Image 1 (cartoon, rainbow, N blue to C red):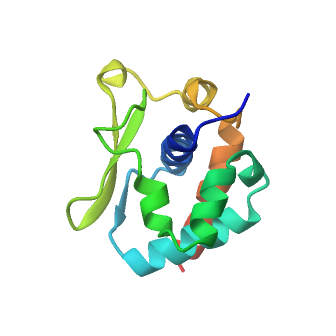
Image 2: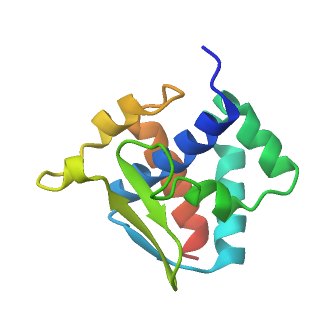
Length: 134
């Protein structure tokens, strides 16, 4: 099934969030250049990137990696996690259905378009952090 460009953007952004949470990171300092370069580098190595052709095109045409990563903000139609990058840090927040329970990365991955397992999002996040935390 083909995923619309909007849903591809939301999927990649929402998928990156549980990947980072599995790395015990819910907040990152807002360093735009470092986040851009780190995301683009990790994306280029990620074996699932072919499932998100619009994101590939956007990054190739100059879209900021940090925008791609944090696209799923509170206003977007994502079901589980969203980003807030309005301050000095980039933060991941859970939707209300997760308020009284532990985040389940497998359940979240199952609800995201693209059929990427939680381990796939974890791999993207780990590669991103290896670059970002240097």
